[in-house]
Length: 299
Length: 251
Ligand SMILES: Nc1ncnc2c1ncn2[C@@H]1O[C@H](COP(=O)(O)OP(=O)(O)O)[C@@H](O)[C@H]1O
Ligand SMILES: [Mg+2]
Image (tube, rainbow over all chains, first blue to last red; front, top):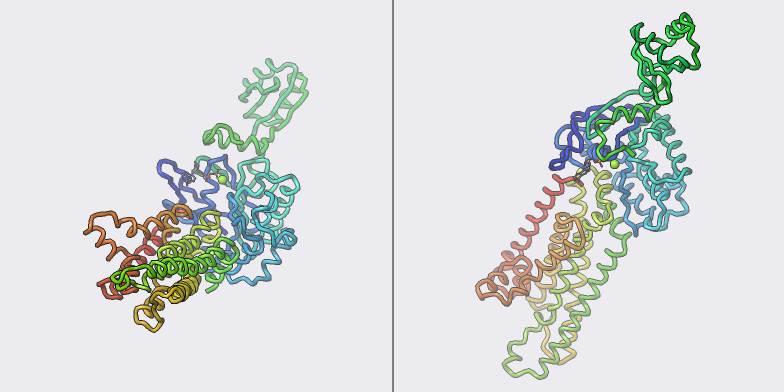
């Protein structure tokens, strides 16, 4: 469980994170979504006690990170910038982290095996490919078998095989009952892994809900008919609101699909299509973050 | 204790830190020989007055001015190699309390710099004095009070300088800037010999590394505890400033 309470981080003029309050629950993958520059990495660094908040607090399992006697046993993390000394072997890197938390050296072999790095364990981390570095980062995150995991853009730059591996791993970690917070600037990625979403833009909380709530029916109905102009007028007379869609279809709100079907039948209007519209996650994200994208379009 | 063990794993798994430790010891022996060898030759052709002024201990230990830079750099690396590679964040996230991490690094610095300093000072002494003796110049036996004081207190002075380096590594967050500042600071007394006499005299008596060296080698009017106290107090202040800054800045 992670709880943020009014977290704010200011860098001079830049308000990187602006009064964020939300809770990340166990047993679910919580997607932390926002365009580049939204403040995701800063928020994660503050949870880990790396960046000091200007105001507000973040607790992991009810405690501030700095008060955790063995932090790696409480919260594992994969940060955006990989932090391994290029001349140090993967094994030594994990060993020193294990030592800081009184973890047995055998645990290092276990996590190396878990991420498939056993054969590369004694090579300096500087020669690792991006995929291997990411696996080493995951190994470090899992070292203390923590109930809470923070993963900052874990699939960035990975090949399809690596992306699939991470997705499966993330789902598995949540299924084991852990609290998993995964950031991304890609809604499509979140659609595949997250159960819940916390969406931020320009450092502010925009939305927080189960992923289904983002993709639900938004109440609009798409209508396709050869008599669109006259049917549109008829619909408006019945109190509906009508807009023209992209390909000549009508986008109707304020009336249900069955009522529209009955109206069309009564008027003898032929209907080619009558579909309650489902917004895609991508559209929902664009809509949500439209006003808060910092550098042009969200990539 | 466990965090200290982790510091040793970090230190021993990087070649730069291990190499620098060995190089410091090797350089001490080599400089002891080189300076003494040159001094012995000068002694051979010196006037009687020059022979009276001949100070075998100081001449044989002149290399300490170079060695102090290496020992301080060793302390710098304990902090700066983490900033250079970005592992400081991983370390802070793993250890949690920043005071504990800094304390472990200070402990690590002492545990490496002390043996290196003992080996360096003693080897320089042995190499220097035997070279002088072999060259037919006067030399100082280890039983001599001045030599004994240098052999016992010298390594402690050097270890303090390593802690000074550590503090700079934390404050400046990079090997190059911290080594540059440390080197400039430690060599300033030598560079200041061109300045007006009052300034020069003040620096040579009270500049932290000079105060300690001069009193330990018996060339200062100050008592040993004052000279050493100036250095220890200075290093303590540096470490406190480093801690306060480390605690209050983003990692
Ligand atoms: N150390 C820093 N100094 C100044 N500005 C920063 C610093 N770190 C982050 N920022 C700014 O804070 C904002 C949020 O950055 P970041 O947390 O990296 O966003 P995200 O991870 O969502 O892309 C950006 O505008 C970024 O430029
Ligand atoms: Mg980021």
